[in-house]
Image (cartoon, rainbow, N blue to C red; front, side, top):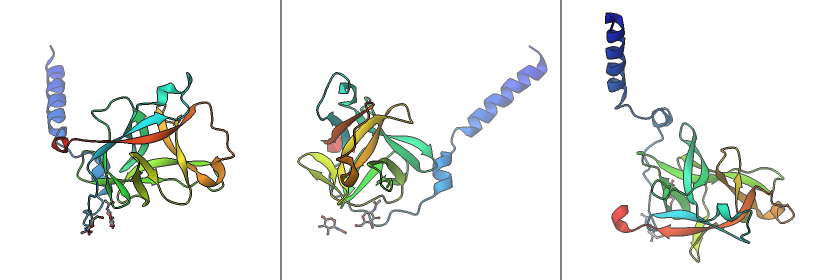
Length: 194
Ligand SMILES: *[C@@H]1O[C@H](CO)[C@@H](O)[C@H](O)[C@H]1NC(C)=O
Ligand SMILES: *[C@@H]1O[C@H](CO)[C@@H](O)[C@H](O)[C@H]1NC(C)=O
């Protein structure tokens, strides 16, 4: 082996070793303030889909776990995967839905408003999210006036993605064929895994 090649390999190994203990760029650039007011009012949980009106075309959307799909510094889309072990762990802080994504920051669920739309996307972003989330009859729902149910669609992430239907608008809308209306079942985690 030529000396220059050996040197290059050594340098590559060295820089890889030095680069390993870095903090993820996402957290370094966002740097939200410490979360002083946090009062966990439920055990930790995962959210699991249960398709309403299950059929041969939509049964693939059932029994999927909520995950955060990284979309930018401190930003995530709410998506669903079969993998349970790395699913987003959440809890309620009053009526804020807070998620622990394994970093030092808390993430809050927010829904995107689409003027005159029938539904909007759901995000899990760093900092406090929207208020109004509650657990009712074992299901995760929102109590604000415009909540019309949850919908999961094969969308821009190419995996099932969460949308919130708007109460005013969605009742007249035809659900696209790549979507299914779902309930989000709350699956509490054993205290030992918290
Ligand atoms: C935390 O939430 C519980 C239940 O809602 C409430 O009774 C308590 O006063 C809250 N504590 C703080 C510090 O906000
Ligand atoms: C927790 O709830 C309080 C209001 O009771 C709010 O001020 C705070 O921002 C919330 N924290 C998170 C991380 O959502």
